[in-house]
Image (cartoon, rainbow, N blue to C red):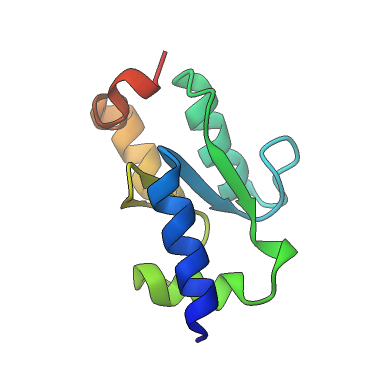
Length: 107
C-alpha cells in the first residue's frame, strides 16, 4: 500500500471530528450498512462530519483495511480514533455509548 493513501486517511481522520468511510455518499448511501451508519449519526443530530465515498478512489478500500486493520466497510472514526462499522455503531447507539463518545458533536 502506498504511503500516499495512508497519509491521506490519517489527515482525514485527524483533521475532522467525525469521519465515515462509506459506499456512496451521505445523501445516497449505496449499501445497507453505509445507510445504517449515516442514519445513526442523523438520529444523534451529528451535523458536521466527513463522509468519504470509497468508490471515488480505487486505493481507498485496501488503504482503509490496512490503516484500521479492519476488513469491512463502513468505518467510522471519532476524534481520530477508529470506532468500528455498522454493527458496532448500532450496539453503541442502542446502549447510549455512542452519544456519550460524541459528546458535544451530537445534538
